[in-house]
Amino acid sequence: MKLLEKVQGLIGKGNGRTSKAKKNIFLTIIIKGLGILIGFLYFPLSLDYLGAMKFGIYLTLLSTIDWFLNFDIGIGLGLRNKFGEAIARDEEKEAVHYVSTAYFVLGGIVTLLTFVLLALNFILPWTAWLNITPDMVEEVKMLGAVIIVAFGIRFVTRNVYEIFYALQKMAYVEYFSLLTKASFLVLILLIPFIMSDSLLLFGTAKAMTFALVPLFVGLYFFRRKFSQYRPTLKAVKLSYFKDLFSLGVKFFLIKVSLLVIHQTNNLLIASFVSLEGVPQYEAAYKYLSIFMILFVIITNQLWPSNIEAYVKGDIEWMKKSLKTVVKVWFVTLILALIMVLISPFVYKFWLQDNLVIPIGISITVAVSVCLVTWINIFSIVLNGTGKIRIQMYAYLFAALINIPASLFFVKVLNLGVVGIVLGTVACLIPLAILAPIQVMKILAKKERGIWAQ
Picture 1 (tube, helix red, strand yellow):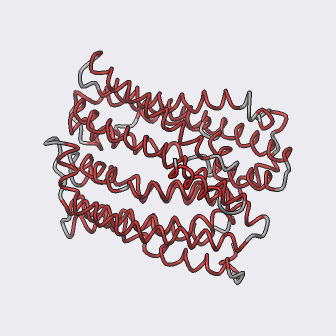
Picture 2 (cartoon, rainbow, N blue to C red; picture 1 turned 45 degrees about the vertical axis):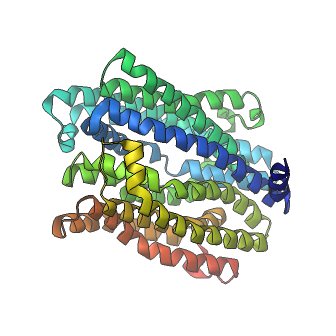
Picture 3 (tube, rainbow, N blue to C red; picture 1 turned 90 degrees about the vertical axis):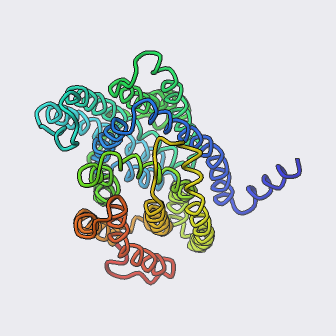
C-alpha cells in the first residue's frame, strides 16, 4: 500500500504536462511489459509451428511488404504534429480539418497502392529473390496478396492512433497493441489443430489480426469519445493537405530512410547470408531491444508533450525532460552489457535447441540498439519542434550508404549476419553526432540557417 502511494506521489509530482506524461509512461510500461511477454511466447511457438526456414521466409516477406505501411508521404506523423498544435491552441475546428484531410487523402493513396502491389505480386518473379523451393511459390504469393490487403486496411485505420498520441494518451495505443498481440497468441494456439505448418494460414492470421483491431478502434472512438473529430468529406481542405504534406514529406523521407536502414536487414541476410540467419537476427533483436522499448514509450509520449511545450514557449520544461531522458539512456548501457553477457543462457532457456545464436550477433545488435536510442532521445525535440531538415538529410545519407556498407562487411570481410548489423551501425554515426548539436542550438535559442529548419 505504501509502495502504491509512493508511486502515485511520484507520478503526480510536477506541472500538468509532466504529470500527464509520467502517468502515460507508467501505464504504458505496464501494458508494454505484458505485450513483450506475449511476444516472447509467440516467437518460439511460431518457430516451432513453421520451422526455421518457413519462419525465415515469413519474417522476410513481412519486413518487405511492411514498406507498404510507410507510403503515406508522412501524413500520419504530420497529422500528429498539426493536430497536436491545433489542440494546444484550442482550435478544434482546425483539428477536424486536419483529421478529415489526412483520412481521405490516405484513402485515395491506399486504394491505388493496393491495386499496384497486388498486380506486382502476381506478375513479378519476386519469390525467386527469397531462394525458396518451387513447390512453395504459389503459397508464398497467395500470402503476399493477403498481407498486402491487410496492410492496406491498416494503412488508413491506424491513423486513429496518431490522435491518441497527439492528445498525449499513448497508454490507449499500447492497450490496443496488447489486445492485438493477445488475439494473435490465441490464434497461434488454435492453428495447429486446424492445419500443420501452413505458412499461408499462419500469415493470414497475423496480418488480418493486426489490420482489423485498429479498424474497430476507429469505428468505436469516432462514434463516441472522438465524435467531435470524426472525419467528414465536407471538412476536407486542400490547404490543410499542404500543411500536412510540407511537414509530412520530411517525415516520409525519414521513414523511407529508416526502412532502408532497418527493414532491409532481413532481406539482406536472406539473400547474402542464409534464411536461417533471419530468425537468428530477429531473436537477438527481440531480446536485446527490450531496453529500447522504454525509449519508444518515452519518445511517443514526449513527442506531443514537446509540441505543446514548444507552441507555448516552455523551453525550460523541454531542457529538463531532455536531461532526464539522457540519464535514463546511460543506465540502459549497463543493462545492455548485462543482457549480452547472459544472452547464451537466455537463448537456451527461451528457444531450447531450436536456434543457436552466436555471441557476435548479440554484441552488434546491442550496439545498434544503443545507437538508435541515443538518436531517438534528440529526435523527440526535433520532431516536436518540426525542425527536421538536418535529420532528414542525415537519414537520407545513412540510407544511401547502408546497403553498400552492409555488403562490404559481408562480402569483403565475410562477417555474415554480424556484417549486416555493422552496416546499420556505420551509417547512423553521422546522425548520432548532428542531432545533439542541433537540439542544443534550439534549446539555447541560437539556431540559425539550416539548424532552424
